[in-house]
Image 1 (spheres, rainbow, N blue to C red):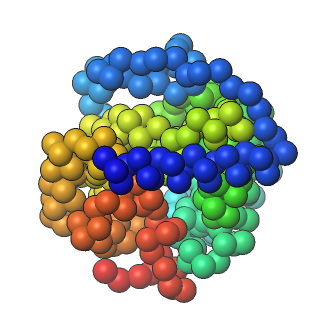
Image 2: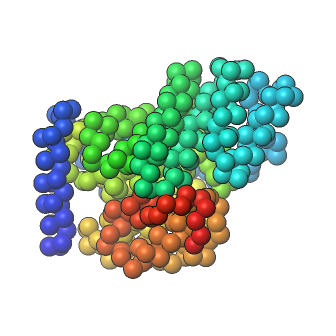
Image 3: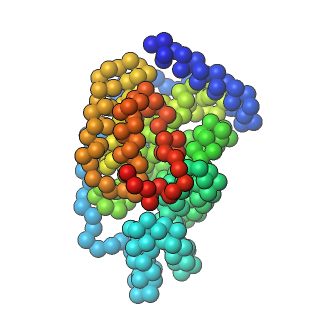
Length: 337
């Protein structure tokens, strides 16, 4: 409990200093009280989520690749398939360039915009953490392309998600607390995305909804749970909300390594902060079973390594992110275990 009090005091002091420095200081009302057993929404009460068990399981991947309307032309369909092939081997830059050329043929297709944004978001994620400006540049490109898709279709959930992902990537690349002016915009975008959540499923184990829950959970865990930060920016961290979102991601796809490592980080974070031994035990159990899961995503070797490190240092779980826990110059997708 003494450790928890000291950490909270440190967070409040740091947030107060940042709030004074921020040129975007905003007043904020107290957040509404929430039942600890209720589902935690993001944004307004209208955006609250149903219980995890209320969501039906994912359906199988379609037997035929999804094509936008313009791909009825043979040449364009071939280009589309080529872009997908490049994505499968993690050549996201070439895939993005192909999609960008297809935009010229059918600028009204929002799907193509968010696919480009997704590719740039992956490029940001897979660049070495030391290349801060490259990661931020790709994050900006993801945000810009996704925003163009939203202008075409304001109900495009995938566009909203990748706009948020791009914003979050820029903020995290520079240090989430050094991006004070971004935090309110990120929060507003996150709330909008919860109202129009993404629905596209690439594979049964790769739904955009699960990716969205994972990203949002990471944001709420890394952001300090500070009243002074909320007064300055209109947003604060929420470890319990992070835990709820992490559970939702794992409920969708239980075999994803990144979802499980994110869940373990949230369990350990809340468990240590609130002195709940049952959550700490659950978090350790999740980390131990990660080693038995097979790789599905390009970042899985890194997340598997992070799981081992988190077992050694469980009290540092609140601060877990790939940026801070993985270093070196080699691109992440090419690193070994």
